[in-house]
Figure 1 (tube, rainbow, N blue to C red):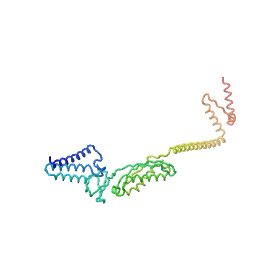
Figure 2 (cartoon, rainbow, N blue to C red):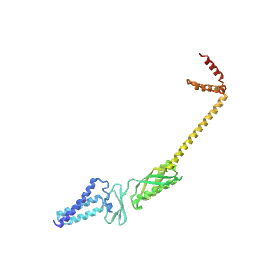
Figure 3 (cartoon, rainbow, N blue to C red):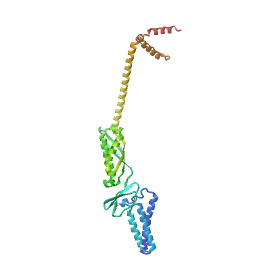
Figure 4 (cartoon, rainbow, N blue to C red):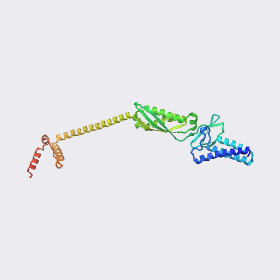
Length: 326
């Protein structure tokens, strides 16, 4: 076996290994197959370009094997290397900036696109889907000097990938830090009661502040939701006791108002009974009837009350009749 044949078989083995790698990734059904697969090495290579390199290199090896000349395999390898670094793929939700000799050229994606290797470079791929960021403000003082821990969720997205790439270095960190600062400032402008009862208002205020700050970066903040407002345990117990005392105070006030209203009604009734003794007698008789209508009941009435109601003769007559009854 000649050296030329050994070289061709070695190149064919390399091309077969690359093609097997691509097939293996496809069988695994990875969602990011078309994204750069060698990011850890600092090389932006897509699965499609690797597949093209394998096919072109294999075709070159096959051509050399058929013709007996080495130039087909050389041409196949060179063309494969060009396609390996020239063909890029962006997902439906991704955009990427193309820089030619350091200057911005255009925005590419989604789908497959072509660049000139060495001359053109790519920025990092920008995801334009809605993202979620968790923000926490710990031991932050409210307007009434109460330390609180607040957890919030921010929903944001990149609406202009060109600005997001060219205007800010790391917009993810910028969003997180800006949101944390705005949350602390908003906590300092509100009292604890407002933060607990008006979370939606606080979220809208944070959304407006962050949206004004991030719009020049090509980023919009859709909404901010306050998840939780936590206060120290000792303060929580004190607030619970305060709320209980407030409820007791309200109950006593209501009871006092009821007593006042009852006294007013009694005073009005006394005026009516003073001018109408017959009504007073009827009322007294009704009270006695209500008291003794149950069997086995006994009512003790003061003699002064009996004389005042004019019922002394009636009660004496009733007593005599009861004594005569066998």
